[in-house]
Image 1 (cartoon, rainbow, N blue to C red):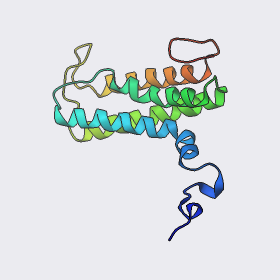
Image 2 (cartoon, helix red, strand yellow):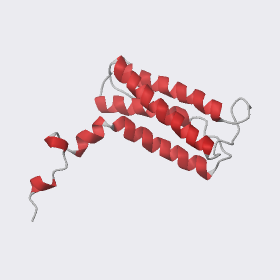
Image 3 (cartoon, rainbow, N blue to C red):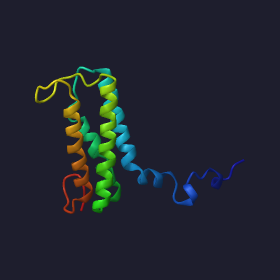
Length: 142
């Protein structure tokens, strides 16, 4: 029979799965949103999900701010912007490779890859703002 301490999944006794999830909330959230975008785009390649890259790239910063329950440092903001932006760009590149970015763009050009990369940059900047904003807002407490 196993004792309760044998079932402890905490890394080196630091608080368990909850701590791991809080520490990697940005990565987990951004990955989940990117997978949802990928599933939608692969299902309907002729539809462009214009704001999906914004949501993917900014979700790292949103999750980081939500978990921290307060503003972070500019370095934490840059890390969130870089991580979210990188996952959005990688997802866009994969979707372009699979031919799932064949829908129309907002400005009428051919192919949605350029639009997707521009919106990923906007989302990364928004993720930075989520982490570093000092004043309270609709989504986050001060």
